[in-house]
Every structure is written in C-alpha cells, then in structure tokens.
Length: 73
Image (tube, rainbow, N blue to C red; front, top):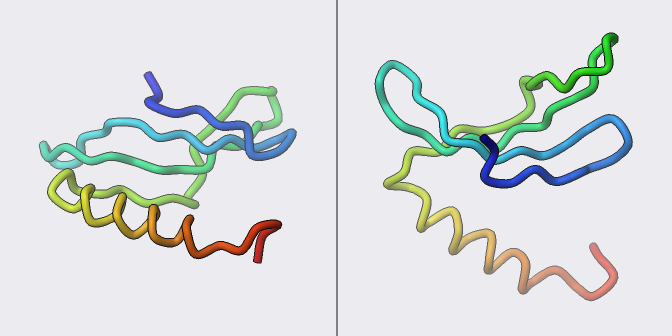
C-alpha cells in the first residue's frame, strides 16, 4: 500500500512505499508508468532510502522547497 500516490501526468505517478531488500527496510520513491495493458508498473526511475537517512532527506527537501522561487525555477 503506497504512503503517497501522486499523479505526475496522464501516464505516470510518483509513489512512496515501504520496501525490503535483502531483509532490510527502505522507503522507496519511484515513478510508476502505465504499461500496454493499462496497468501501473514500477520504473527504474526512483530511489530507495534507508530509514536512518530519512530525516536528512526530509530536511534537504524542505530546504530545497523553500529556495524554489514562486512560479518555479
């Protein structure tokens, strides 16, 4: 079950999920795309973050969000 499922455009979504790899937990941020059958599939575009790095990533994203000028870059 996604923590976040955000529509990026008509054919892509950004999903944040909890995953495990080799028995270790991760938070996965990944672009999902619509395949030929109309189902969403995970793409290779994304990143898996260890839980002990989450607070640093959240801090960096918050700072980056504050620095984006109104109306975008």
